[in-house]
Image 1 (cartoon, protein in one colour):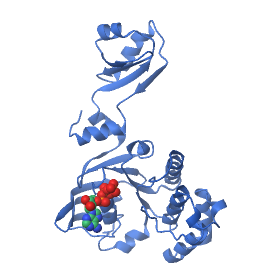
Image 2 (image 1 turned 90 degrees about the vertical axis):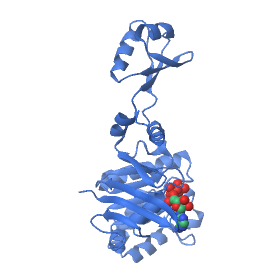
Image 3 (image 1 turned 45 degrees about the vertical axis):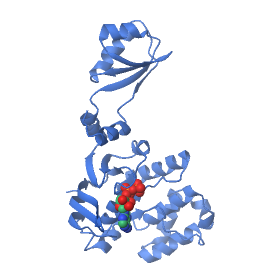
Amino acid sequence: MSLIYVSKLSKRYGNELILKDVNFKADEGEIIGLLGPNGAGKTTFIRLLNGVIHSDSGTITVSGFNPAAQGDEVRKISGIVTESAGLYHQMSGKENLEFFAGIYKVGAAKDQISRLLRLFDLEEHQAKLVGAYSTGMKKRLGLAKALLHNPKILFLDEPTNGLDPEGIRIVLSYLKKYNKETGTTILICSHVLHQLETVCTSFAFMDRGTIVEQGRLKELEEKYIKELEITLETPFPIEPLHNILGFECLRKSDSYITIKLRSKEDISVLLKEILKSHPVYSVVHENNSLESIYFNIREGGNG
Ligand SMILES: Nc1ncnc2c1ncn2[C@@H]1O[C@H](COP(=O)(O)OP(=O)(O)OP(=O)(O)O)[C@@H](O)[C@H]1O
């Protein structure tokens, strides 16, 4: 059975229907990317899963609990990191963790705090006031805070907002490492697609209050990417390629050619032909990215 299971979920704010007929599921140990444009309803969805707000209709089960009726149970087994992270700036990093460990009644808090400070590279900054932390350090401390009670599920709302590329890489690699070590299920909301591509094991796409597609990258690629575009670094002249093999050339510069292919099998046919007379220095698959899939889904096509 899925760890998180959602069926026909709807939520209104006043007269506005914010979420409609949302179906979703997440298996244990997955890192799921919840993707969608601003205002799609991602934050509202996470708040419903965490029992902070209640739905108007539909079913939610989080590890067997109904968040609306058993919010405390859900929060015992889940951690959440939102934009603000709820840290106290006038306390040090370590004092923040000690304070929240007290609230969450974390057993063996001292060991757990040391472990998390180490895991998130905050040991040498533990005595510094959080007000003097960089954005990246605050994000990492926010994660440590959410993980104090060893949750089974971690909800992250835009965890990389405000970080520079290096900070983004660090936070995402910590998450991946943590998931691998502990098997914690992680749901990450974001509208920055390329960041999640290498981190998530599956993806859910939210658009105008509903989840329009969910699956693993491979499944989504098979469904939505029907024509391949590859770019080759090769001095091969384009005309013979186009004429002999009948492939459509989309772009050509001095040393690169971008070509449209019908299937993966065409890649070896093409390479074999080119390699008869010219070298190939690199091959890049252009349109199998999450971004291509995302736009295909938003345009309502499957290929
Ligand atoms: N407390 C609230 N009262 C009224 N409307 C709300 C409330 N919270 C959210 N909304 C509305 O619900 C819609 C979805 O908002 P939500 O924050 O869930 O989207 P999101 O996908 O997380 O967007 P973003 O990527 O910008 O964070 C928006 O139209 C928003 O204005």
